[in-house]
Amino acid sequence: MSATTLDSRTGDTRTGAQADRFDMAAAPMRVGVVTLAVRDGARVAAFYRDVLGLEDLGTDGADALLGAGGVPLLRLRGDAGLEIAPRSEAGLFHTAFLLPTRADLGRWLAFAAARGLRLQGASDHKVSEAVYLADPEGNGIEIYADRAPFAWTDASGAIVMSTDPLDAPSLLASAGGTQWQGAPAGTLVGHVHLQVGATDTADAFYAGLLGFDIAARYPGASFYGSGGYHHQLAGNIWNSRGAGPRKAGRTGLAELEIVLREAGRAGAIADAARKAGWELDGEGSDGLVIADPWSTRLRLTAA
Image 1: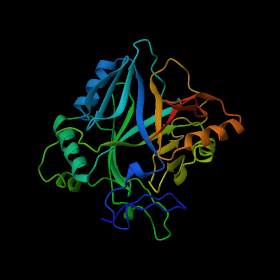
Image 2: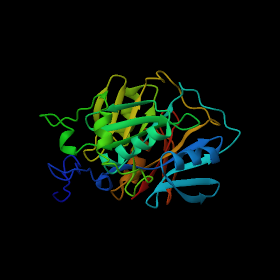
Image 3: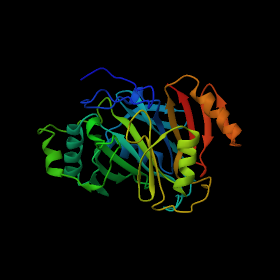
């Protein structure tokens, strides 16, 4: 594998033509910690530990922290008084946990089959292979493994994604008979897929204001990438077409951390937001806080 290179024009951080894994830490923007508001914190935390194999990293105030390899990935904010968010509301579509290798995904799929877990689907997206499920409060989850970055694009260099049947026997065979031992070190939140009210409005915010590339489009969805990745964020209208701002006091995505690699990027975004008349929810040493057009709260932090 060649050393990581950064194309100064595109911010492409794929590690050479035949690299087997994208270097997420080198991307200008990536997902950090996902915070979910849940009614039963203990039950939901147990699910992420037992089913996804995340480790308990303790608490941060009243919030529970879970992660992999000592790295926080998920924060659970429990409040029994919350109302369950309707499926048609803007907010979270799914949190996507990226495993280091295809064999890891094969091990998890074998574990899921042995446990009789209820899955919602499984797909080959060309750029990745993915399995879908939901936590006990209906928060969507994707567990996936990427294909090598050189396989993501067509002859023109455009990223190509699709939704094809998953070759489960091949994926299971990739594990080589080894068993799932929990989320391995190197597991990340590879992307977060959002429900939005309109994709053109989402494009203006996530690409126009925050600076993500529109890496791909799909009927009713836009995929936002940084550094050449197929998408760190996505927004779709499949359940939420025409949705307005989210209501407070409901379950779902409470906050999404976006980690910025470049010093000064948050300040530039803040300046652009002010010029556009966008209200900031906070700005300080703990990051720049801004809400998207549907009141989904984002915290932009420095790497």
